[in-house]
Length: 174
Image (cartoon, rainbow, N blue to C red; front, side, top):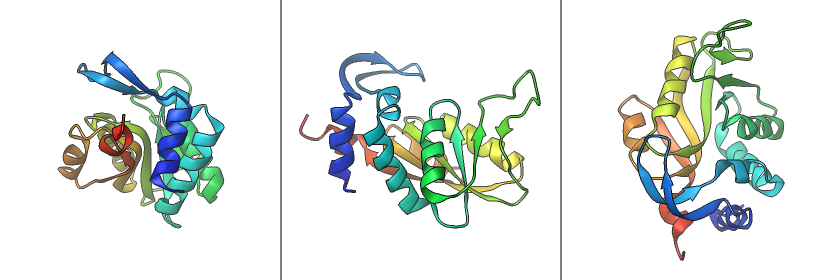
């Protein structure tokens, strides 16, 4: 798969929108990448799973951030045969009360999969929860890096951010 294949698939899924949008961190943007459109499109999911599979490594557990990255981590797990866990923003108030769902052993090497990185805050929160649970985490893989500070924030905490696409690449020729 080439970057252009993924760009074409995201555009075909109409996941790249232009206008005025409020972002989850409170800022605004003149474009929006609708993760729910690309995460529910079979072609996009196939391309993302394949690209993530090429990058995760053979000795890692995968982690997806609830809710947005769950489809991504599930298809990547199926593609690689690697187990995965789900990191919640906060512990459930019912059932087991877990913040990390799934099987995670102390010392497991984990790579976090994420849909869109803007500030990097949700990825950092997930990494911190995984580290508190005993995992070794030093890498986050993301579909699109909006290039708005996520890489720097994560680097400050010893975490490498690797993206399939950057906003610059995705928006070129638009």
